[in-house]
Image (cartoon, rainbow, N blue to C red):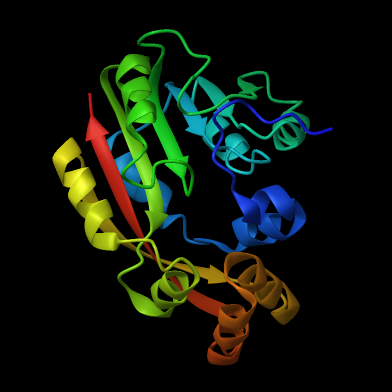
Length: 232
């Protein structure tokens, strides 16, 4: 039986279909624009980096290439196990089954925190923000990478799939919290058409997914995101 950390917010796309989500991770941002934007604001060379909602650990080896230490946190026990397996040969990586609201990290224990498409979606994430204030040491930074639902076809498909999501309320929330933002014009690029279609089917309702597939020729897909950050 899968163990889920107490207080976890379900993430159906990766929790239910990690193999397909792996295809999505491989497809997203082939130029590395998100990492470039974050590193320009706060490099993580020789730093301690915390990846919140690390899933199967796709980004952990990439971070570990330059960071002194990388800590992955994932509330889904099976995914955390896969992340540990992925990073078994990396001595500077550890993975914990835990939530953003209760991080297994000492006070002022990390320099950089990154959360990609995980937990920090606006109103309701205040407990996780308090944890960031606890664990990030002075001179550090926290980054949140998330879909920009106000732009492009992907944003339109997302809004149809999650009609209760309010970009205006989310934006107002982050402004109140004092975070800064930057638009990221990311893309997904796939090796096979079947992979693109499979990813769209785990991201949207069946009706919206079929529409998205029909509207998307080829193997490339614009993926508008927003980078949010705060220095500590």
